[in-house]
Image 1 (cartoon, chains in turn blue, orange):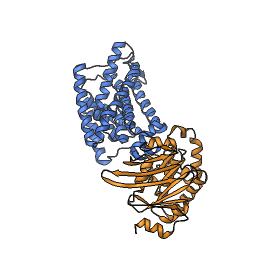
Image 2 (cartoon, helix red, strand yellow):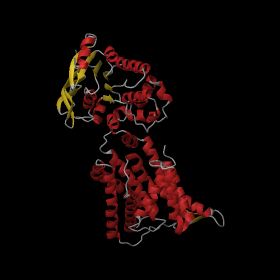
Image 3 (cartoon, chains in turn brown, yellow):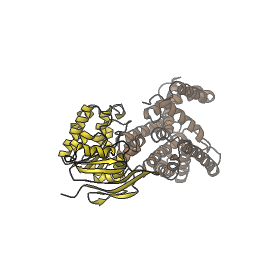
Length: 279
Length: 237
């Protein structure tokens, strides 16, 4: 039991990271990005390919994948999504939905339907606590990476002018212009940041678990659940939501994990639709 | 008389096909207080938005510090010291008072003087210092107006356009805010006061312009304009 709870909590950090980019676009920019799961898997494939080609540790691939995904997000938002967001939330939702299909089929063509996994030296290393309880090092590392990214993102959004200009623009576009923010690029920067977190998320999901070109929608559902549970745009909420989902997955096992997760989600939607931490 | 800090020449501004401002011209002498009064729908706010770069005019020119700024966007003008305190304060309601003021120092030149400007704003409005950690959306109307004024002052402006700051506020709070504006003017700030209320703004300003149905119907020295003249221009009698 204790062992399972440890796994659940460690999964939580990884799930929270998968959700945070989507949560940010949801809560701050007002865009529901249904392609977020596919972007995570795209980043995982990128890391995996680089890892094989360069023969380096999977962690080092972040040096390339994070800036690449930032640029992809920036350009995508700037040339396509900003344009459709001007036509209403439904149009933007449908465009990201279509984008998820394009990405999924594109990845199937390029990377085939086979599973992939990134392997590190400490893949099955454990820290022994007692005879029946161990902490798996890989899961601990990916969980800590998830928490670190969320903390850094939180500090960035609340302490820097760029982060604050994103929040200010989502509160009041006109007032943001009046204080000197060039609002044309603000949402593009936000999307760039969201996809940069997806790059890290792809790595943290692709090391402990195998992934497929079609895995994106499964992770999107987890991310969506975490966002609803924790509250849109809330960073602490994402962490807590991630742990709740992680525990549900572990305690329910492979048969009941997803089922229990969505029962919890349904209860939350009925009782507290604004999420745990939404002010 | 020295060169005016702001010159507005024959501005026309539309929303779609609707002409909100037909033909508006006015001067704001450097370091003066100018009031612009007019009934609801006379085009005052559209004119202010146009001057501040938040709305693009269809005809006419705006000169600021001798430069043509017609069509220059708001985020550029704030860097040159032209600020607008918009109607209804438009605070960033989900952000704290402190973060609202901090956003006011967004232009690069203002960031360097941020600490001094924070002190200056907190001296003008001590209540904002008490509430600095609160979300601005939780404040009263008067306090939000203080946040909006403070936010504009954080950018080190030379000219501030105040768009109906007394709207919906209690008379004692209006009195305090006007006292603050006079104090800022005494320190060298050029001010444009846009109001529906005739008496207080005319009394506070050196020059008065009256707008009626998208045109400037009357202009003159505030102390020389008679009440009858102002009322005629205001109501179009």
